[in-house]
Image (cartoon, rainbow, N blue to C red):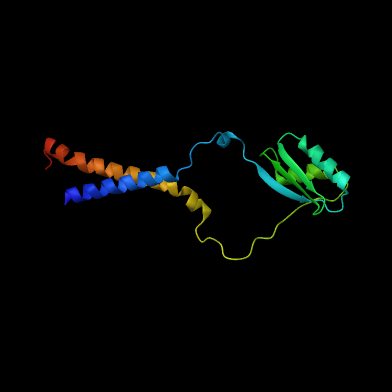
Length: 155
């Protein structure tokens, strides 16, 4: 009976650790880059030249990684690091133009959504790793406990 449990623990440990190795995200140099946030601002009513000038001006701000102005939709889209918040960015943009600017709020797509939270999906490789360690520890304990018990005269 003990051998069957040890074989089961070995299989579970190998499966969990192999799945963890297969699912874990390998290191990438881009992991060291600061996180970037994208926000769209509604600047309808601004002429094309002023919109392009505003986009060009914001490209020079520290913490802004990219900007684009779309005259057809009246959107100014910025990507930026955590040096800004949406409100501070909106205030700084508004200070540079007479046109009213507001944050563009996009509609949430209708239809079914995944019932499993993304945080659980992202944490799954970590769960596999710790489960693999737990099964490995249990296997080692089951292998070394009987000789230790005999040595200490417990059994």
